[in-house]
Image 1 (cartoon, helix red, strand yellow):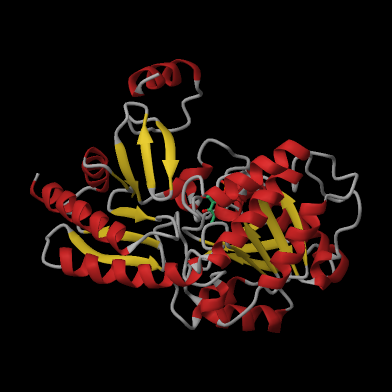
Image 2 (cartoon, helix red, strand yellow):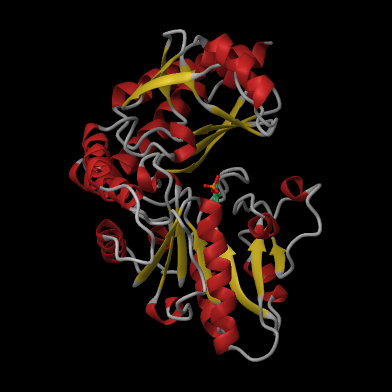
Length: 401
Ligand SMILES: Cc1ncc(COP(=O)(O)O)c(C=O)c1O
């Protein structure tokens, strides 16, 4: 099948939930992709922050194949060796003591919400189930996580929303303090709001949130679905703030593209769950956990957390040098390798995205005026230089047209 044939079948048989670009990728290797017509691309989207270890890393492919030959799935009614090892590994890497595994970011956040309500029922008086989240947040597309998401555009058409969420301005500690009530049991935030526009809070914000949660007896839930696993230049986004949450969720790059999500928590919070409280048929199966264990091995062995920090800085320098005099470019948002080019009103993000794709660079438009960059963590200096040259040209051309 070529690109056009894939597009025609998709348009006839798929539910129309995605607005897709006219390309079908069929092969990947590290930071490169090839489409069904044989054209090569430099991938600076990485499946939206999923391909942290690049496409088809040989160590991860080998681990998945080997595991698939011996055992892919057994129920969580029985012990699962790679699941036990993955939970141990994640606990060693993070603040957490215990993990629950599922299949996606939304499910990881559903787990966090259920765990919080269970904990509050056991530890707090009265009807205390409210979770405060932020405007411009994104926590997923299930009914509870879409209610947790503080953006109306994702909620429209799906009312009634699941109750129990209130929204405050991100990066505003006064607004958070004013919204806490006797019904509040937790605050749920992303360390960087990625889908909401790549909003990095002030350095003092997350420490102040942590302190407020401690003073008021609230749990702090951090959604690290997009920021986790090294992307921002630390293993987890909370490390930049020098704090730890009570609950953290992961997904996206955890399995290098193999579906897996995780909800991690401290001993005190995690043990609010008892057998029967929560479950997932596929969650934490042999294959998914093997993919995640191999992902952690590769990140460690290849120093990818440090590379994300270094190449993130390089990207900032190169983009500033390339584009600072261009009328369409404003500034670079984000941290490490989780970035967005902020455009002025002179250039449209969709136009820049389309021009880059034609020139063989995959970037992703966010709204009208931002272009997301989330390349694999092993991106090289040469890749960064190539991407910046193509992106620079696209922004200049889009600014003229
Ligand atoms: C911060 C955050 N949380 C949750 C999700 C939802 O993850 P999933 O699409 O795997 O359900 C996303 C997806 O973009 C995300 O960025």
